[in-house]
Length: 156
Image 1 (cartoon, rainbow, N blue to C red):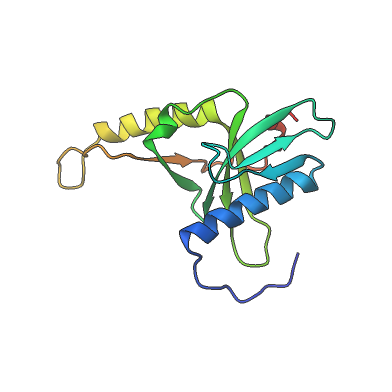
Image 2: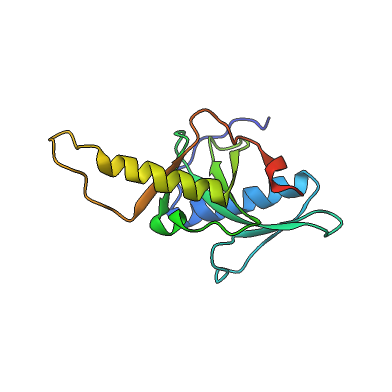
């Protein structure tokens, strides 16, 4: 482990997202895969990853958090975004000088989770007794680390 550095101020959302993408590409490379960041106009895919022999490849959507909570915000498009061969890697950056935590989840699992959990949230009541109003925001959670470090799910 690297020596502990003084934690910097929280990163801007853009730097947070970019650092998560670079960490995912670096970890994939460290595991022996070919990884490349996409251009910003690649809808829904931040990193392309392939086996070393190029026989299998996947697209990866990266979502990064600076908080320790194992939950990430998504937009409502995640309800329907489930192309085969596309995965989410949810990243918790952690303290400076430490290796982030990576939660690797198939897009179809994320779509089902956010769709059902959001519908369940809408059926509950707020603290004041009123119904929740619909919002375009969704959350994905992995509190029991079911997908922590599950690079094997990529099938590369």
